[in-house]
Length: 355
Image (tube, rainbow, N blue to C red):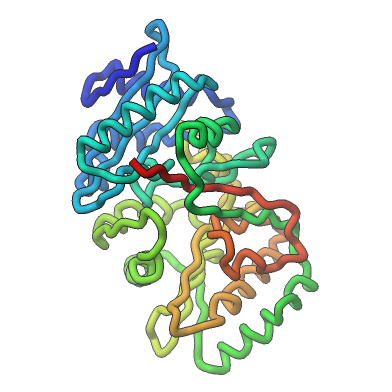
């Protein structure tokens, strides 16, 4: 078994991109191959923020593992991501040893992962409920990956959950006095409105400013420019259900946002043919399941998050749709929203290792 670092060599790029297709089935592969290719070849909008070091592991010339180490200037941490591996301790060990050696040579004192190059692309590892089909944007991996990390000296640094909700009813709107909270904020002069395409540029700028302020203390968070933020999220304009995106205003200032998406599973990562396009448009028009992706509320407006949740819950009831409260940091209040409708809870971790 051997490990090979590479940069622009076509063979290794193709092998790196091919491995996930060998490990996952059609329904559970969450690889965005187009995005990965751009990152590997330095053509992604975010490449300028970091240096990506890529490697492949081979057994008798067959690709059996891959990973990348991301190095940021002025950061004492190195980040390990794009991790894929057969269920083999030796293969994982060889890759981790090489990654840690490189990180030390670059003067880094800690490895954190999994993170695929950037906070803005993908991070975290799934640890349970692998019988469920992955939902849109879910960090998905093989069940044995957690042990491969733990057995190589990594410890769990952060925990996250995703709540799997059944169809909501009017009774759920009575939980936690969220309707009263919503009405209270309206009386104070708050407005909670849906996104629309005409105001896209203005709204995306407002969301950018809120995210930069509210998410800056998140693990692995990195600043990016507003221009780059808009480039990354421009594709969402075509696939969002605008009625499931809410912006809260107070005195004409954006003070909160909530972004929900139809659950496209992995359809957006596939090559788009006429059939796939038809399926995507059908889901966008009338989804039976929604992923609640992002929420943020300025800290000077406590309780507004629950008021915004009321509006989203009403939408879900009208659609008779199920939903997923995605990737909530363990211990946050939103973890307990609509508790009576929680059917299951997916779990995720972020790991680290002192070098």
